[in-house]
Length: 238
Ligand code: ADP
Ligand code: MG
Image 1: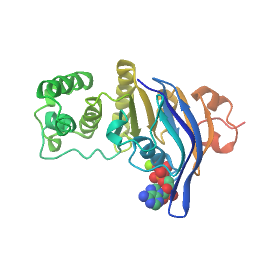
Image 2 (image 1 turned 90 degrees about the horizontal axis):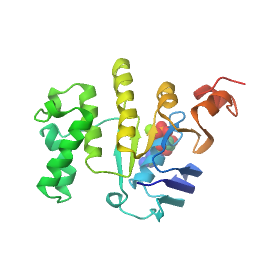
Image 3 (image 1 turned 90 degrees about the vertical axis):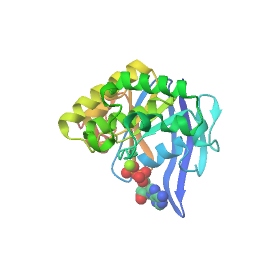
């Protein structure tokens, strides 16, 4: 289990700086939600934490270890994306076990971890199906299952529910809250759904143009937004 620390983290693509010095501490087991307009840098931040994007400046710590140059597979992190590209020719069971198999884990361990994830996500009856035989919500649960089997210290979710219809989003939101309770892991979660942010977060981080505009609990931001921008995302204007 781990917390995270970002210290003056920056990212440039060519000459364009898109993350302009982010300082943030995430406590162990905390559920942190990033919100902010499209293009403000939410996905880039997650991708740097996951190691899918090189950090241009500053430091990233996971637990006590500086992670700037550590391989993604060694960071104890699993990421769930908005488009949950499952392997169409593999069953649910194979999709969930694939990363472990690829990493050379023993067969018995893979079976045990897939069974555990299937129990948590209530996927047991679907294990022999292929993605084409699943609903959108079921597919998203498989994508989360693929992350769970890796036993990450930190989960990163990038708008995981935005492709689902409203009813399913409500259902999945409850599932994700339950998952956080049961697995007791640290979660960083990107959304532009205000209700998701308010109900899931211990702490909300409002981002704007590559910087943090305000950080606080849902209630703090709702009651005391620093400005009209934050109020537009979360709060009631002063
Ligand atoms: P968000 O997830 O908040 O919508 P992103 O992190 O995807 O925002 O993007 C932040 C900014 O960085 C945007 O201006 C985007 O165009 C730019 N950007 C993201 N990835 C790349 C890339 N690989 N090359 C160049 N620019 C990028
Ligand atoms: Mg994004």
